[in-house]
Length: 313
Length: 271
Image (cartoon, rainbow over all chains, first blue to last red; front, side, top):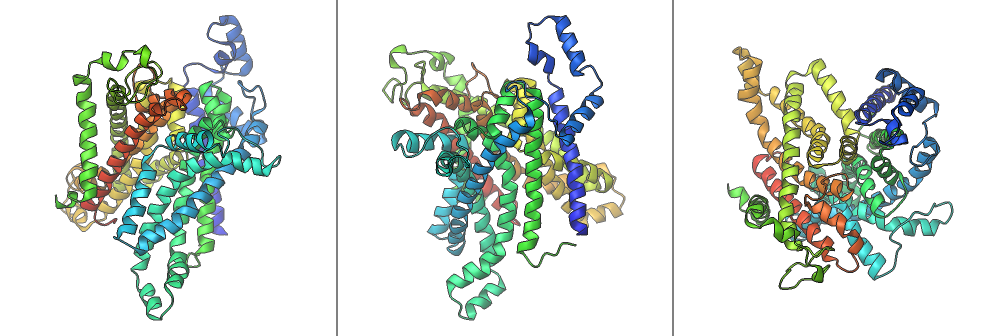
């Protein structure tokens, strides 16, 4: 428990730093919120009045204090573009992104673990080369390029799946999955490549260890050796890397959600950035960084739960 | 040298050399007008004798635009990675070599920056500064710095505990000399590998930024920008996306292969 308390304290501190960085980065903007609201051609007096009423003339530290208090008390301000309260807006979009992040992770793991094991078991043979080359291609193609190809193939030519839009899972689950499938696949392919390489290298180092030789000498079937002995030991590092890739996924969803017109967090962040909606940029960037960090915490704790050798001090 | 003479090393190295030569010499050999000339009768055409890789929506030759785009993409990626190295190297070395509270403070900052997905950080910085070529470089450079700093710090920490560093310290070598003579040369192999792989990621990042309209702006031609422009014409002319997409993919593939081989040759511990 002591360890978890310490980790939580450190998480709280890092969240504070994240909020500070987010706030500072968005405040080096050449224009400010008042300028965005009224436009560059506006009357200087009206602009000055609006600045005063929005508190933009206060020192930066006071503005930050006001913003962070708002974040903590649930008052996240209003979006300039969507003219809505930011809190509910983000809560709504998080569901969409969670759907494709989880789906792409499932697709990636389902393909990467067997492929990585297959490569490791046949190390330095053609199977290994084939799997490694596939993975290398996956890492090298930009995900939006995958996205475009998937749209062309599955939506335009074959007409099997919709190429844009989001349906809420609560409204129609099947339609929701169908709409989320192509964006998830586009995200999952790049991720799969990373995880395949990781699974392959972890598995091949484990397969050369003593206890595997002992297991084989005992006459256990190859299937038991690989799936019960080797994989049980390889799953921890693979999970850690998968957790770290969540950060990469949250970068990629900005591109992929915009490409597929899938209205989640990535799409929302892109709209905010494109329209210089400063309050919305601050909140979306903060939420994404916080989610990435908390995911890593959860993965660390899960790792300890899966691997009995690791005891939380 | 023998380590480079594998199939992977030759293909990867070959691609990297060809792309670099293209980036250097294409703008000198191909007149600008060839890439900007609009052939209105042949808009969105497939491969023809006059346009071997087809044309875009304004009838401009895709092959020439792809070849000229190489310079922009490589230049942005190269400068951005150089920038992150210039900031990340001293940060990482100081943090790893001196340790203690300096290390604590610097790495806490780096860890915080790592919580921001690199592409999100780059997009935000680019949007905040206003998208253009210079700001794209700054955005990618800043976004990549924490990754390099983290790796360099780990290496510096490892080297600082080596017996030869201890021996040098025992004879009273000052810190500056120690870093220059003993630490830097010994952390270089993994750093070079990381720089090669970062270049691949920087090319992908530039393409992503430009694709979203927050990177390179017209009239500069870059691969990401070409893919973005192709979005509305995919049905009629898939080549408009395939040509620049393949250029990105081949370059990144070459850099990744070369990086893998470099790692095998320079850094045999991590195979």
